[in-house]
Image 1 (cartoon, rainbow, N blue to C red):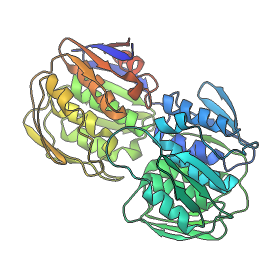
Image 2 (image 1 turned 120 degrees about the vertical axis):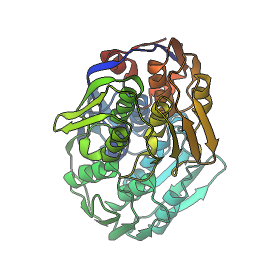
Image 3 (image 1 turned 180 degrees about the vertical axis):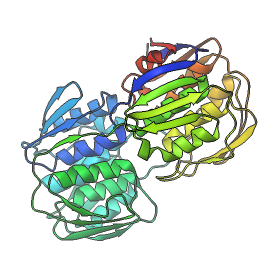
Length: 416
């Protein structure tokens, strides 16, 4: 069965290692297409999105060698420019291959990318930016064809902050002829990781970590080895799990500097947070208190990818609180599921008002997207009785083994 079975009610105690970052590794794998040789990527998470990306790259004539959490990508033979519809359709990050393939082969044919249904995520910014760099794009009902006789540098002023568009334009610009400037660029750590990988391979990028990226195109990049940073969203999920269940956990390798907003939110709910070079220690012995107000925002604000997990924690906090979503309009898909467990939540457009309850009750739940699915699992760990979360395949897109991690902390859950 495609489900996770949970017996809730246990406090969490112990240590868990935080896996490599999903949101960082996918554009880094795309960047490997720009390099005519072998790249070694360490700390690559064993998640289904990575498997789909590697399969997609193999279909483009890359040679992939995986040994544990290390992946070797040999892109010397890349020649194809058409992407298999079945792989493109299941993951939005396939769009990351667009800029890299245009730089490498000059043409791309692909379907519109898939992924989680969490709201409108049009690729207009990607396509418009590439057009400014000399790409001719012909859109079809189910996809598009893109072609260029040579990418050229351009000045981009993004009307909204977009992680995906920023990454795609960076990938297109590093081998383009001339200089590229990206204004209002996203500042997420995953973009910093992508830029660090490319710089290590010989790219010329300035302004990394700021809203203005300046890229001077180079003729070629060279082979490189790179270690993917730890996943701040997985670490934040387990912070929320400790808030839900109570206890004391140590998140080994958690990227403290990337999680300031998450740590602040947890502390506002009564958790003790201790940061060190080794990771983050989270203590939640007393009953949770409702945060004064939680609002998602672009980095370095509170991440939208952790909104669902903290919403689950808020359902068990004392008092009343408001959580506002400013990034995606469809991030509250788990609200009906939490209500089935006894949560008291009132939806008001892009806000939810939460009145804390003493306990949640186990029941059968249905994951509809990645982060909401993980939030339902941690809610089940806190609930009284047995819960079943169906559609675990959504969760496996971003978590290596959420059951193993939570069980190592004292939860009782298993895959069905």
